[in-house]
Image (tube, rainbow, N blue to C red; front, side, top):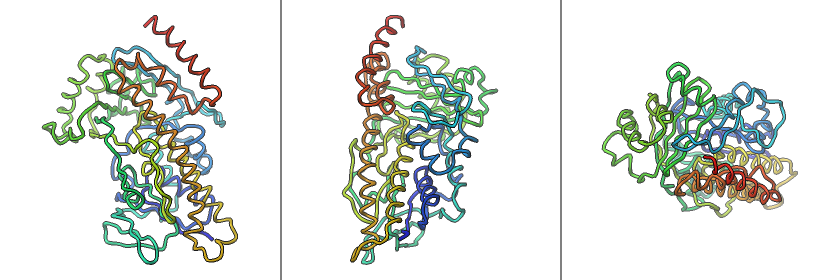
Length: 427
């Protein structure tokens, strides 16, 4: 009864699914990845893993001790501010973990470290590099995978699309495409920030600074190698990178000139992050699927992570949601594998599909809540005039929703609004 599973994409979600399946079942599991190697491109900055999703998956995968080598509990330090450095939220970091999961736990880990940790936890032949999916096709014997390198593979009981926002796997299930969220911007790095930008390094306090004003955001985050990751997003046309008149992916000085204009009245302490950034310039447009997006169940294929529910980064829960998906899908596949038989006249693909449909229903429930939180946080800070002063309460409540039981949300709302009403009298 052990199914043969193809995972499309070796991102965090795909690797976590493979790790969970290999640790908890006897499935035949292969990841097909378009990139040539693990170091083919930059993986971005840092992220925090939450107790009931990301951290729970790490524990379930048997990677807790390994995770501690990379986790930065001091990275929980957080400052939410505006362009004038008015403090709207502050949270301190911790020295280390105590081994227990509390609702508010959110240690940071570099995306590069997370992917490496997951990859090293897999048998070396689990990932087949250089396999860029062209499409999933129907055939008389079932579904087959057609790759850009010319190979065609079939015989899988389940294909799991973990291939990101513009998933080729998703095309077989729906015609829905992600749409532009109205926000684009640059990410870049300050190498050796402790010596190259000591004042900024101290300001970030080994954690994160998120600044919002005028429909723009500036994120400054400490990485484990002492560099600092800088990300700017603002309201730009989708074709900005093609029409701006310079190479938006490589011309650092031209990008800085645009940012100086966009952020001309922002605090010099925040602008210092732009001035000190030197490497890794990347222009990114932000895309999302509609809140509440679903697809009709089809045996033999499903989606996970960004392929299923890509969202903007403004609630910081994309990877956490993907890890939750991986746990739920693994539970269903393990439950199927423990059954004595598929049933008379029922193929393994169809029998497994009944369990996968159960995964999809739970995944939709959880992912739709995550999409709503993300959309609420994005709109509060980037599409509300006068934010964050006019919308900090809404933003805080969206961010805290997962940690507050439904019965307590009314009380939390009163506390947050009254607290900020008093605070605003003094700032």
